[in-house]
Amino acid sequence: MSVQKLISLTAVIFLTQMTFAQQAGTSSATFPEVRAVSSSSEYKPHVGINVGVASPEGSFRNVPGYGIEAGYQPMIPFGLGIEVTSFSSDRSIGSEQDNLNRTTALVKGTYNFGGDIPVLRESFVGLGVGPVFDSHSTWNGTHFGIAPVLGFDIPLIQAKQNYMSLGLSAQYVFVSGPSPDGFSLNGAAKYWF
Image (cartoon, rainbow, N blue to C red; front, side, top):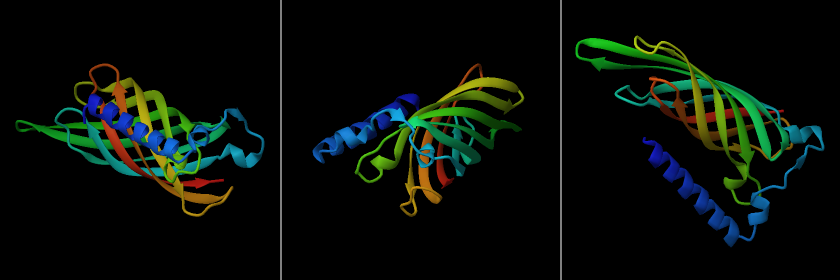
């Protein structure tokens, strides 16, 4: 998926959701008021696992990817966390096999939406930054990555504390140097304390 397509898709989804929010008369609630956390339940600490598809640029194959994450909400409506993901992809060049093994460790900041509109109230947008560890015959080493992210986490039961959520997130990791950028689409299961 090209960067232009990802940006266009993100813009269309965002504008569509904002249109529905305005029609429902809840646009002010869609963007929660920035304020300090006033109770321990508002910190929303969580841990989770991600499983999905990683798609590095170039002629590398789409492969399963997996990861773990942990985070919390230091100030409403902003989240802060860390995500570690990994995948291994290959491609054939003539008669030779060319493998890419990648692990990323991103610190993520997110903006969490609110309001009453289903899915939108559990949605977030954000940005992750951090090292990208590649093992490859040509660009072996550590590179810098920056990743816009878009997703949602829907609670399985409505509760203020101690619940599970299922969600989906999409991110595109821009990687410095000759290492290929990559898109990933992941399902996420999280436990909220």
